[in-house]
Image 1 (cartoon, one colour):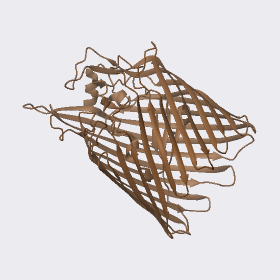
Image 2 (cartoon, rainbow, N blue to C red):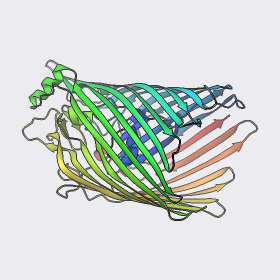
Image 3 (cartoon, rainbow, N blue to C red):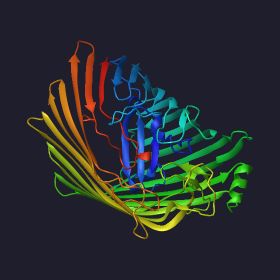
Image 4 (tube, rainbow, N blue to C red):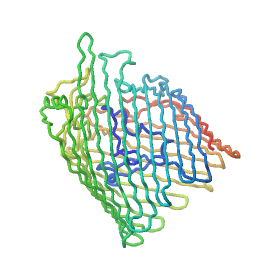
Length: 580
């Protein structure tokens, strides 16, 4: 799936997936989080799984309020961690500036057995600046800069930690809204981001062989999108986008009594992608709407260093020429408003994704989850997914409920297959796997969410559950599939006070991939308590929140947790926030 920040492509620099794009933002940076399932997320890139868009908070232009903001400080007992947050907004008549900062520091956390989990500490600093200038009544220019630095980040389930993870993200946008004429809305953005990451084993007490593993990822991009004035029953949206990404990572091993050994784990490779997206929203009548979405994308990738080419020549691949791909995504959805309370939404389509950097060019990347080294395959085919989804929505003043059923048939599914003829590089690894396309795989599932307010809205009951199952073309379970999980909460509200009780239940997972080396995992249930109170003051607002997570100190791990590391035990937290 696509994970983007304010529509901007960003790629991690770690071959072991220690730095997804989500770690380089903080809640104080964000205005909202937009989730689009399956083909619904194709406007931000070709995808089979959907898109997660982390929308950045804007500066606010308000001539009546010059300076506003908030300060917060919190403490969490499980890891003796602290969090300090600051956000400020200054506004003039035609421009505004927003600044935010976060500092976090945590020690090793305690699990439900009372054991301290070594190498789970971390420390990070995040700052962001957003500026906005009102060019005219309907148009504005916006600039954003985000800096995120993390260091001494422990990964207890892996053989290495992170020495540093650094991101620099910048963008310049022009927005036009409410314009009379054929062009009603327009959004143009240019952006650049740079990520640097280094794995580190120097703090581990017993290391067979010391290794340095730095990585870099640099991205430049731009997109232009607009919405036209409705013509008859049609509302047209068009977007064109482009990005260039360069990544590289290497590893130097220092065996005792021998010369250092050097290897390109991600040989330097460049990727250029250009896409065109078109959406037509057709209002068939006052109760029905049809949406047609189409995206075509051209992607070209190539290895840029000779050593990387030589490494893959050993595996039998000749990758001297750029590898070009054409991707197509088509989605059709239909919405029917059966009544003011009940809505049906159906969608389906064909979606594609190109292989990731690790799937194409990874060279002996160790996967702790299945204890295998992995090598890439530059000749992989695109994954193709036939997606279908049915949504039922019911809503009244006090009650809302949504039920979703979905299925996906993925052709050319990409998965690692054991290569007995290859020797391991990592000491203790069980074997070597190479990425291959299998004929197909099936994924299907359902999820539900409801919200009920009662007793004059003093009580709010919320419940969500989700279920997913996956099988390959031989009907064997796919790896890394989470079991059924449900979360229920009951909140009491009275004036400036709230109290909330939560229950999280995950069932046993016995549908596991034996080829992958998965093991069955037990189910669990966890209880949390949360509370908050607001103190009203003449010019300020003081909020205090506190709670207990994992109330009964349950020793548990989720099925997808690497190494089945136990999660934190009882965690008592408190946070004080001053708004002005």
